[in-house]
Length: 330
Image (cartoon, rainbow, N blue to C red):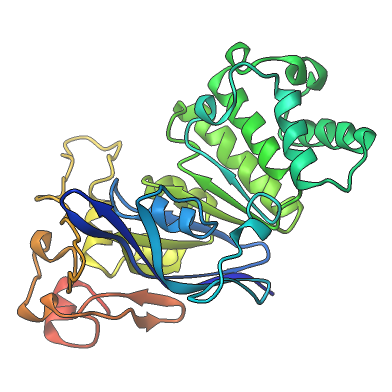
């Protein structure tokens, strides 16, 4: 069943240097139980894209086009804006830094209790208390009462992130968005949080959107991967398709830049810098950094299917000699 869909989402940011397009033509469909990774380097537009899904944007950032639906009902279109009906209640969010998302002068219990009071007013006080204990236990806390009485500064980074996840799932949302939820943690704690996110997703058959710059971490958790660059989706497909046989030059470069535990191998960086995508920008955002760039890369390019559920935004897609030489779309 389709839980959530985004179609042709475009976002503008008004800056002193002009109007920037941090997200262009973004599409995403979530079904029950889906775990989708949205990956890309800093500035690729992934965070703006997922925050747009719940209308959580800065004052100078606005959605200018796109249709967003939850369970078939329109949440956002050119005529409607109803994010308040789903934010928190139906779509929960876990942010990058738990120390920032948790209030340092309030206990964990008071913060989760406030979430339930606002988003689940149908609950009695006893039901809220029971729900708090249940979610804290479900995210791995054994000493639930002590942690609930604690302030964030008394907990480790991993414990704070687990508490933040508990607050996000307390109202029983159908979708959970984790926006770089592991990047502020050490490697061991990252693995624990990834396992936890998978557990809380599958146990309630909810959908998870996992935003990260770490493609290997996404590969461990996600069944589908969406690769973003310069505000656009450049490749999407099943995890094994994108990771084992990437078709877009940026996806290939991203995987080549991953450090390997092998002797005598050097780290392969991506030459050049991401473009500043001003309003009116056309063509492939990766063109200036791509070894296979052609003149028609400067034109508008659509996502094209290269295999079942595997799509690529590249002019080389097809059976041409150039595509075969680059390993793209063949």
